[in-house]
Image (tube, rainbow, N blue to C red; front, side):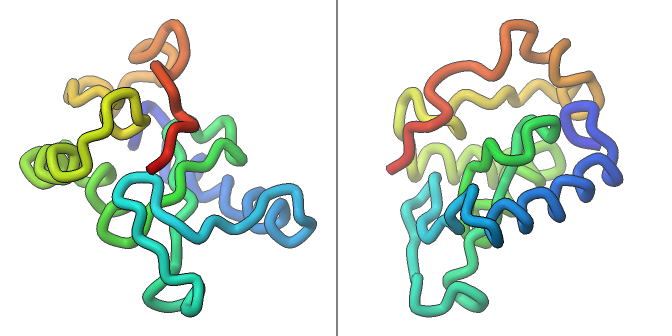
Length: 127
């Protein structure tokens, strides 16, 4: 469970995102919103950018992440040092990844309980 969302709820966003990319509602991102990595010449290989979400109720509010950066927030509670190193390395005050909570209770608490005023800060500020 992540931010109170079950694995089934998380998986349910994938077809919505894929349909939005197919119909042009959303352009497939080509750069990571954390580290800036981009290899658009290999979009299905080395350059694949994941469509990360913090709020699974909003499947089109994507936060593009490369493979390494996408794994880090999903492991932030099992390996907080890994996430902390990534934040320190790519520190950009006000950027979405600097604003997510590290409170362990947020893993299982509903998102609205963790963020009663909504997700904090400038979620659309990318490198």
